[in-house]
Amino acid sequence: MDSSFTQVPLTIAVYPHFMDHCFAGKVVFPAVEALKILAGLIGERDFFTSAFAPGHMADARFNKFLVLEPGQETIDALCNIRPIDDTRISLSLATRFSSKNGAMTRIREHCTATFYAKTEPVPNLSPVHAHECEEPVFKVATDSIYSELVPFGPAFHSIKDELRLARSGAYATLKAMPDDPDDPFKTMLGSGFPLDGAFHAGCVWSQRFFGVVAFPVGFDKRIIYKPTVEHQDYTARVIPQYQTHGTLGFDIWITDKQGDLCETVSGAMMRDVSGGTITPPAWIREGIHSCSYFSA
Image (cartoon, rainbow, N blue to C red; front, top):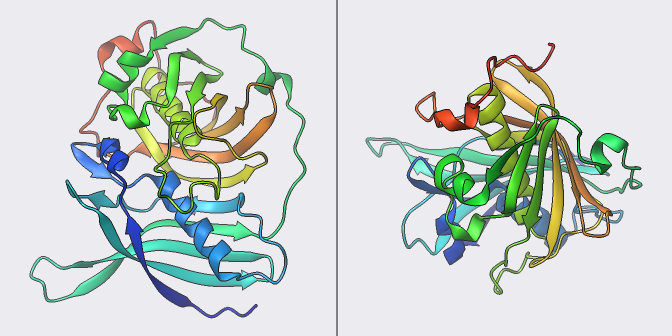
């Protein structure tokens, strides 16, 4: 596979439920949907000589929000494709935008990821992943999460019941909400709602233990072992790993009702993307006297 660079125009459907995915008063295209579109493009175009494993991706970055307008039905986008070798290919989802005076047109990348043509064996769940913690737990009701902490509309209320927070991580029951029936890529990576809900859990954990409203900006690696299915329930463990230069790092493990591992995310990066203009409500910090959690 050579190192040539290819740019492919795309028309992306905007489904009605996307209008419930909001940040700071703006509707933003979900990052999990962007990854699904990139994986679908690889599957359609047969880039690899070996078998393609759509659920193995790395070095994902959610560079810039892709803002949607009310009532918008499609997105005119570009996919930038850069083969790395016979087993890896890098793709990015981008759009064109004009300068303020309209004199120049530029490209803005929104999501980038490297996909691998290989699979990995399912790891054994260690006790920290397989069982609830024995630490004091702070419980947050779903209504409070989606009215005050992660103010998304009903279509993205992926966390069920209550979210359990401890210093060692966040523990959530997740619902794979229904995808649009017309989505051609709805089964490409499984449902994106469980991972999106795990990001919500990480956001709430960040608010409680660090006092910041942290949203995902990328991850080091994601592996899907058993694609999640819409309408089904899952369990997520969101485990803090590091903090550096304002970025919080987490590992995420998502399992099904049988306890089977469905997917993992290593090095999920979350940070305040509001420039400090959005802050947590005081009650989520109840009983917390220091922001210091990580040793380094």
